[in-house]
Image 1 (spheres, rainbow, N blue to C red):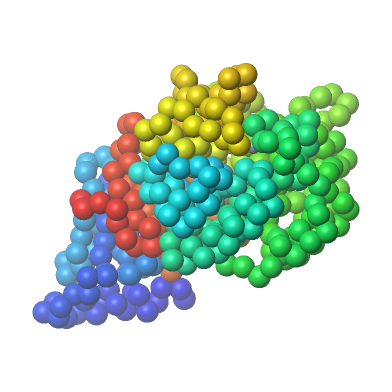
Image 2 (image 1 turned 30 degrees about the vertical axis):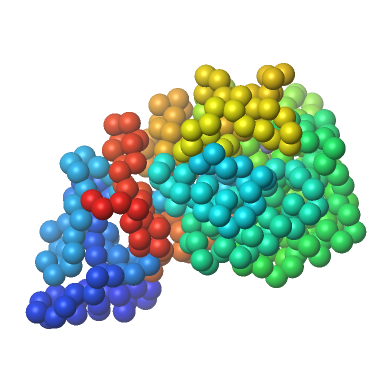
Length: 403
Ligand SMILES: [Zn+2]
């Protein structure tokens, strides 16, 4: 049984009160603990080193274990997992695809409850892709908040380029498969337009463990079905930068909403997609998940930045080019959860699942992340539910704040 030894560690502490308690064993208590499936009132999460031991009623926490009690009314939940993070803390991953750049982005998003993320490279040069892949590989394991990398592009539809640099959008080159399928640490998520890659390309990626997601695409419904037959499961920022729903050509959106094995990222900032469309997405039989699609201003101070040489200004909560094209967001995951409840009318536990359990499952990490179960990594977020203010986070058992 997972966590069995760790339970004995708790017993050990209880049975030997005079023994020095290992500092790595501790508990965090809250009025409401959401374990990813159910809410436990007045409960505590016992953590040993980087792992969760178990969730127990607060009164059952052995007195010998160091206990942090969160302020009244606080919630404790699985940390947020964001699969689309272009930047944060005034850093754009494309500009600083380095371990330092990634650490700045991680720290910026952690303030908003994100404990695991995929730094996301927007369509860029071949060389930049290689550097970004190398960086993610090198940082993985050293920084537990980095779960891998997301390459958004460059195999996209020029018709749906959005903010991506049309000069860099291209079809796969012969040696791209070897670059993308090289043995690696962590998750590799690739957003592509299925209609611009050759038949079999998606199969090759999926066979090598790559998660493939449709995005910036004019794929028809038939082309989408063919891509799913090759193993594509994701839909990047559903509704945005893809063929729209239409009566006789339903396109990828209908296929996503109508497939139990589809996973679609939703940008719930109230700007990118009308809340009515988002509520429609939640009625589909596929699996929604929240993404931020965040840009450098999140957790930073800048109000303008450049992307592929284009100036982006932040205005009324939007990142815009001078022509008015949306260029990512200033959204953070805590706000996305809040918007989900307020704009879409879902319950807080459901919104939390869309921000943790669902993204974990899409990228195949549902056995270690997204739930508060024995043996899972101790990635937690504590927050005030009245306004989703994040009080603290723990990544692999380590808190970012003294409570
Ligand atoms: Zn995009």
